[in-house]
Length: 442
Image 1 (cartoon, rainbow, N blue to C red):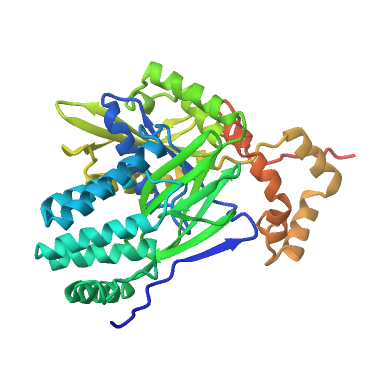
Image 2 (cartoon, one colour):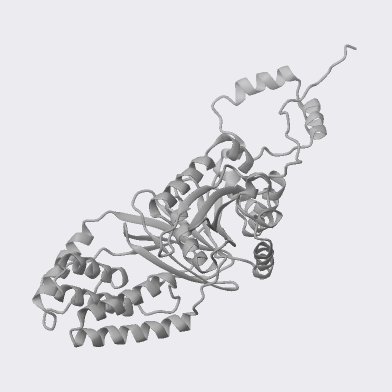
């Protein structure tokens, strides 16, 4: 059989923390609502949609945080997967093809809902192989090709052995490899912060630090992480085009307890998204400060005859920037994909509006007396004008130079939370930007 090389997934470790002076970090929060069983699934869908717009020259950087802990433990999922795999393989051996496909489909759904930090990539690769065989034997070559293509997400060197595998399966695998090699690639940066942790993508453990992951656009990323206070688990779709970015939140030692208290208070009060349009919520403001984000992408399920998801962009100390968007939910519990994408596009557009940008990046507060004193002891207005016209022509402002951001990066990172709370305070005065000097004649 012709051996076809699979697209290699590249992992690049950066020696320094990747950041941008102008990045806006956001977190997705699903508020307690009228349908708690669906909240975990809605959270995962919203995280993936936020990921699509997170990265280079995009509206925000996603801080992946989970309010809802997965119901199943890793041990539960591992045991269930073993059982489903055995039943699926046995059903295939007895040529009960429909039954075998059902078991493999259940196993895949389980791994999507609860990606594992401790897993062997050979297990999902084997599952997709047997699933493809049962589909191919049932006569669906197109679906079988798609399933065979998924094997290389987990094992880039995997291929069927022509000595033991049917020729039709080997030929279909060759077609799947050619199709995969022709697809565009996608890239994403992955990291954990502020505390350390471990990230696992499609059962592969990532190196520590900031990692650039390269794969085929359209691939699912089953991401799990060991973080302070527990684990993170969610599924994302890798898009083509601009490089995306995910930062998985792993707080400091006391952060899990502090955040849990905020979430418990929200669960008891159950604030409505509609009320946040007219006034902010102190627990949400503090939660944003604990996470170190500038904005929250909120969701809440409400029953209006049928389940409906409401979404909105929330600015701490300000509230929602517009009326909530309504996203219908289908019977399976998922939000309507098209409507959800439109809702997030609306939030992304709002993020770039002048009013929101002003709220996210308030002008630096300076002491007026200090400004007057400094101006009076250095230069007269005319001297300042002459100096600016001669020396500053074509120069770069000090706060835009690379050496300033390098020198102050650590200080700025530590001051994010304080700056967010103070900068967005409604009571903070806005500077006029002008200094008036009166000079009396001698």
